[in-house]
Length: 164
Ligand code: SF4
Image 1 (cartoon, rainbow, N blue to C red):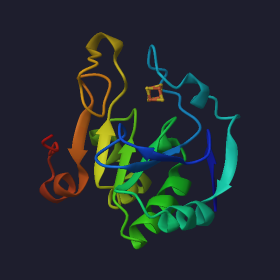
Image 2 (tube, helix red, strand yellow):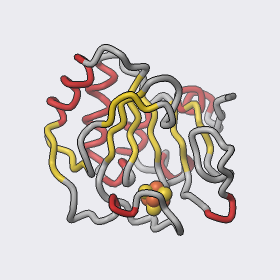
Image 3 (cartoon, rainbow, N blue to C red):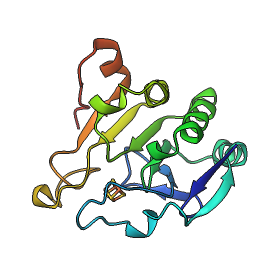
């Protein structure tokens, strides 16, 4: 299976989650947040297809990493592809963070998104809201965005945010 990405993998990021992370920039987003930092990733007709098994293989072989972060774009628009990707990453015991412009409460209503969340460790949810922008926030742009411990939240049926 292939997934559409805005660019190749980015290695050694320290701003897209805890530790040293490999970032996967998915292509396509229609949330249209005012002053989005990655407008080049919005157009669903742009980007390039990459084989998911090859991506996972590269990631597994890269020695220095704390985990993988899915960003974009919004990975949740490529539903089946992102589900396949997170399943494969988790089979290899890789820690997964994902950024989305959707909110957690909406994602859990959709069966494919819910299944996807079962493989994700941390979800940074919600659109970027410029009025709530704060440059001092860690791993997110605006105050409305939450850093959610997905597995604890799914287990308890309430949103549990990760203490930073
Ligand atoms: S969800 Fe993210 S990529 Fe999409 S418009 Fe908002 S900030 Fe930009």
